[in-house]
Image 1 (cartoon, rainbow, N blue to C red):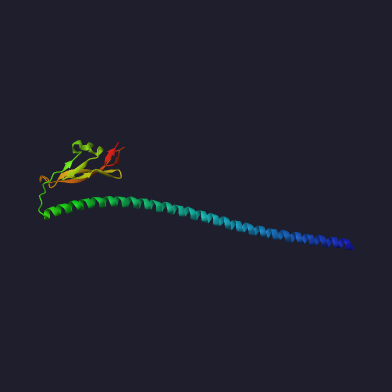
Image 2: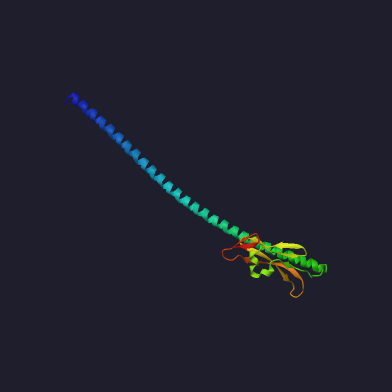
Length: 177
């Protein structure tokens, strides 16, 4: 072999080795990138699942808050009723202690309307003190007079809870159709 052929052979061999080395490095880099992409996809899927779980937990907590709020409102209404009963009992106790007469008059402004009284805002008046019908939510607090004890001639204000009939809503102490 002559020197020129040998030199050409060496150059071709070096070029082939360099090309092979370059291709090997490119393959290694590609595999590393593919591995990193697989890791990133797994992280994205994990984060997506965690986000869905967090959204579900938030929805559950919101439902719990709404339920608790509804229960709290109901308890407040019950407390208001109990407070009114307690106030009535205290008035009666004070009157008994002072040995005052229980003979009083009570006027129910819408009593003559009977069952239709829920469609009119009425009041109860005892000794110039008036208590008006009112609403709590869609429930009507209808003021009435009752004789207590029965046959005593002692009339006291009382109330009845009334759910407004279908299609009606409670507004300012009356059921509106």
